[in-house]
Length: 205
Image 1: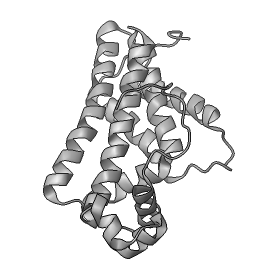
Image 2: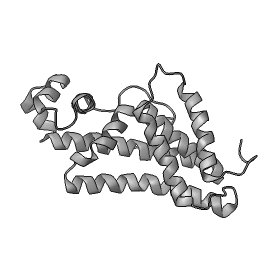
Image 3: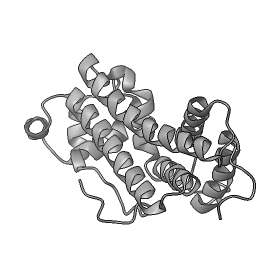
Image 4: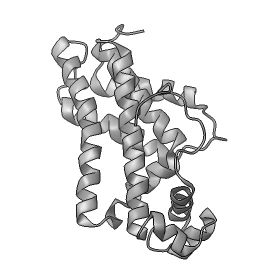
């Protein structure tokens, strides 16, 4: 998948009808509480028609989680690439990308967080490897920031993971009709994220 759009832009659902139906059901009922028949009905398919594309309910869960992590990684990499060389600019861009994803793809992010326990061992390992790739991207930026003197964190890796955890948590409570718009939430959380890694006052925009 190639990033042919602005990484900040989210235009409608990113999943096929079958995966979108599975996502809705998993959010409402949980993976184990959802039947393939319900997913097929939600997608406007027969059960055999659904199985033609996804051989099992596990394959649907893997499809959702793979699509979600692939999109997040793609957007985060594009954000960093467009930010330039400054560790602080790269940090701000990747944190913003994390936040926007967990705002606009909050249902998918919720399922990724809560249903990792429902993945078969091999599928879980593959998903965790992608999740680790995302974390390593931010870890490297924070390490660069500390090395350059822009960040003063005494615990760079822990600080980086704390920032990620804070961004991921947004998916659990953000609502479009809440008190903060996405841009307002990003501004607040960027301030919190910078403080977490000890960004030096006066640096950056």
